[in-house]
Amino acid sequence: MTRLLLPARLARLACALLLGGTVLGNPALARTGDSMSAAYGSYLAGQHAYREADLAAAADYMIQALAADPDNPTLLRRVLVLQIAEGRLDSLDSLARRVADLAPGDPVAALYLSLEMARSGDFQGAVAQLQAQPPRGLMQLTRPLLLAWMLQGKGDSEAALKLLGDIRQEDGLSLLANFHRGLLQMVAGQPQEAAATLETLMNSLETPPLRLVMALGWIYESQGQADKARALYASARGDQADGRIIDRWIDRLNQGQAPKPVASDVLHGLAEALYDIATGLRNDRATEAALIHARLALHLDPGHPSKALLIGDLLQDQRRWDEAIAAFRKVPQDSPYSWNAAMAIGESLNAMKRRDEAIAHFRSLSDQNKDRHEALVRVGDLLRGAEKYIEAAEAYDAAMARIDGPEGANWTLYYVRGIAHERAKQWDKAEQDFQKALELQPEQPLVLNYLAYSWTDQGIRLDEAHEMIERAVAQRPTDGYIVDSLGWILYRKGRFEDAVRQLERAIELQPNDPVINDHLGDAYWQVGRKLEAQFQWQRVLTLKPEDKSLIESVEKKLKDGLSDPAKRDG
Image (cartoon, rainbow, N blue to C red; front, side, top):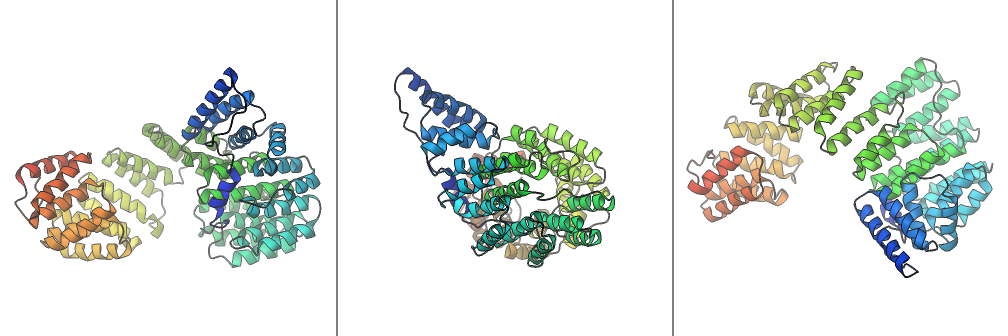
């Protein structure tokens, strides 16, 4: 899906946002004595908490350190950054002003203070605060966008639109600038111009992002053009990763309910800008800076589901699973994003190694939404991961029953059910599923590989399997598992020298896979490189494979070697 992104240099510039304030620095603590010993202890504890991704504890420890050295600008700034990242945004004015006084030009303090002025209606002060900020680091990209909205807050639409026009000239910023130009025109009371701006943007994109579709649809609906909005939603339905959200908008429209504005006023426009910045930062893996912007976005637009969902996603990125779950649970049940949030809760539970709870959660979600199959697929995935293959296949069966006819996008469901059947030693069913997956998605390399490898391991249809694997390798030449399959079929066809070359390449791509190391050991043995074969088999055991049959086979080969060149012992 096309996204409204900032340039690729975003992550590098995000470092500048936190420069001098990153928690892992080492500030000079100004005082001495017992109080400073305690302060330094708190500071070190804060460092450790930060490294462990416990930002709440890190903030608390830094506050304790700050109490002993209240005028330390580095500590002040770190506390401000952490408080915002943790969503503790109430009553930070005094702290932010102290940072601004002691560290002039600090971008986080300037950003927070300008947004608070805007929240209170002082847009003139907000503009002055941001304009005084040196245009460096991330601010050189984000400040103009925020300034445009603040100028609109002052009532200066002409200056705001000119600034957005200037932004469009920046490399990589045209999408974002045009999107916000349309929103700002709508807020400025120029609906026809807003529609024209967003229509032009829509037509320039092969796959428009969901928020652009929603924004243009909102404009159409607000102008009484319901049929035009309905046609837009219908045309975008097939382009979206989750068309169910658009379905919710279509249902709402058909029921005569008004849409929630994407940006009904300047504050919501600012919140949308911060949200888009946070999304771009996340895509560039600048997670902490993204979280700061997302928290500020939600602060300006409390309760907005997409912003709450983004915060949960960012907390997941930081592996803060409990806090992510708490964030996802703040997404209202009647929100179009409620399904995404509920699915994310299950993923967080599984990431915490609470698989049974995750399975129960997904089953409950499936029971509550009998028209959706995705939760049942995740039940099947988790059961398959637990090696409960029969139960996994049953979950996939239930998911299939909820799909109205096979579609190309559902090839994955046949593929994973085929894996479950194969692992459950139900080969006839597995083979049917793999072939159905290829019917829906011809030339899919994962399916080509799995089916061909399975035939190879059974010693059947070797020529057909060889041709399929060659096609898979051509698509994914750096996939060690697929290259291994090519090496293994060459081995099974007695072409041992060719097998060695491919298996050595597979090992370079996936050096720590026990099965690939085992295959290479077998190939070495057949070409007379027996010491190297034994080394590879020994390496298999050091990799601690979970497959007991593989361990037994390797132990036997280490003792007796290989005899039949066309088969593996064990």
